[in-house]
Image (cartoon, rainbow, N blue to C red; front, side):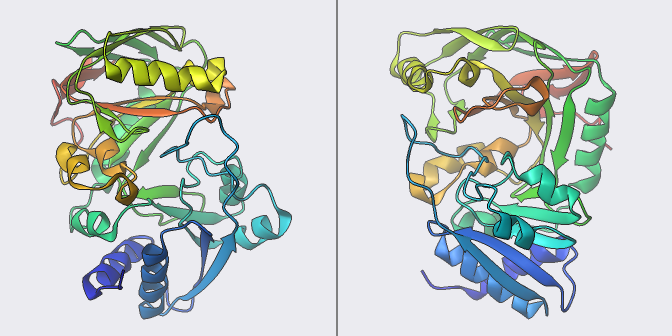
Length: 345
């Protein structure tokens, strides 16, 4: 695939949002399985901005999991290798072009604490990145959403399909993604536009009903039949549904033989009006990582797997964007039946 001018400009735009300066040394972390076109575009765009791109490439790891791993945001390719950690540490921008991304990687806290800022470019076809890079600035609204999360004691989620979730937020770690890593210690991913909370242990109870058209991003698949997840003290205790979608979910989770794969990782909602729920339909599975669907405005995002705030570490992971949910913080409705409310100004 050839580098197109429009794609180079797209990468320039995102690097400007990351406050890249002339003569700044920018570290690009890649692996042998990284998407070559995005690596090439990043280097060309940084050079145009007068920065100095330095590529750090590590080997992609052998497959050692019982089932395929997809779209986790938890790359393990660094393996705490001292020379790699030294190269990634210290002030300046790190561009993450690993396949799974460093968002939940075990080494990320140390990299950020060293003064680095990190932009994770999701493993997407450049067409997706181009379409979602506009003049729209989500920074203020997303930051307001994060402040609201940080000040709330409880989140409730409901839907006509039957979802009824109660989530305690005291002590949760909260964050937001607006798409520009512009200060030390900050991690962002591109495309962006969502607010998230990692609840403490035992905080989530109720029923989550995934309806037709909701998405399992690990499978990169729209549901064709409803699934009901019964959740007690964070853990899915029963997956209800006599259909292929439910059977696939049960089979995948069972394969990990790890109870923590059934537990909540994070909860939140999407805020990007440019992101499309239906976009997954347009791309081959190898051409998308599904980040757009995590961010489409008005979704409720429920994720299972690793959660440092609850002391749980597992590679089993589902990101599950749901439509048509109503999300409230301490009784204030933020998302009404899948539509963002005007409360983030």
